[in-house]
Length: 275
Image 1 (cartoon, rainbow, N blue to C red):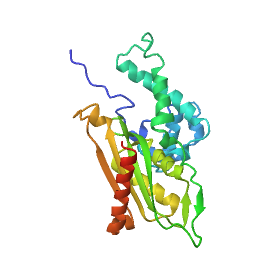
Image 2 (image 1 turned 180 degrees about the vertical axis):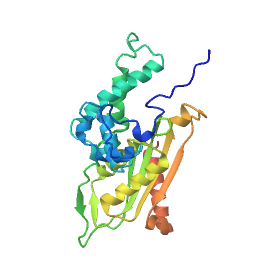
Image 3 (image 1 turned 135 degrees about the horizontal axis):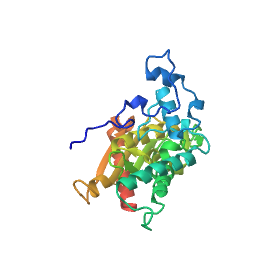
Image 4 (image 1 turned 135 degrees about the vertical axis):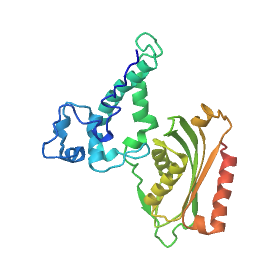
């Protein structure tokens, strides 16, 4: 006997309707769910999932929440702990669907919670935490520094396609402007950009943008070289694969001597601290 397909009420519904609380009644004078979403308040989610409430607030505000986006403006103190609890339930379902005995297998007991904590507190922390405080110092005296600064920053990220690890190094170069930031802040900013789901091309752009914002310098360069788990652990299984991306802004793009100096500095750094 052939079983007829029955659409799942969540996974096969319209994306805008997926996370409407079951106890929410759409006002009779509205014609679309979008209007209803705009009328919803926090009270409509008092007994629902916090993640659903945050998702709807972002959709209501037309806030993009892709894997590489920072959504810390929508989180309050204690929210991450609640989201970890909710994600633990979801990961338990994933393990169940993979037919892993998480009740009796000692290696799988507690795995769902470890996964949830890892996503929120480690590999995707950059989505949920605000930007690091990059205290700036004035660089406007008569003997101000006007040269190039190149910082090597080790990175850990995650491919947003397969959620495989990305491991590499970013070389960040700037021509000093009217303010400087502490050396460690370059790495903190780069790691904040990296700890989320992203593509290396996007990551390179993100780091350049945030460094420019923190330093007020229009002359910024970022060179990233990394290995990707999605190439090493699956697909082509290329264990010697290395991906390189470069973003050049201002003088790094228009002046060949500045560009050469940047890459010469990278070569020196690679000889000092090879990958």
